[in-house]
Image (cartoon, rainbow, N blue to C red; front, side, top):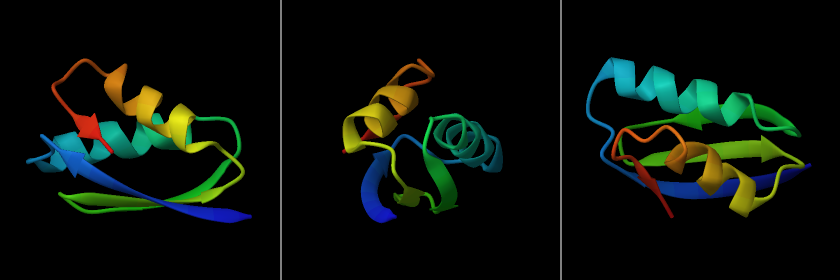
Length: 65
């Protein structure tokens, strides 16, 4: 199991945190997500690209790097 750290932008409210957490957990291979306003730490077999895509597909102005 790998651990991927993402920098997040545009996440400001508890609702934003919930949306991003849910999107990341829905990615195949994700085992767990720890998240803060500026970061996310994801464990599992998902690729970094899949995680970034999941955040951008929310179309709420969130950016993951």
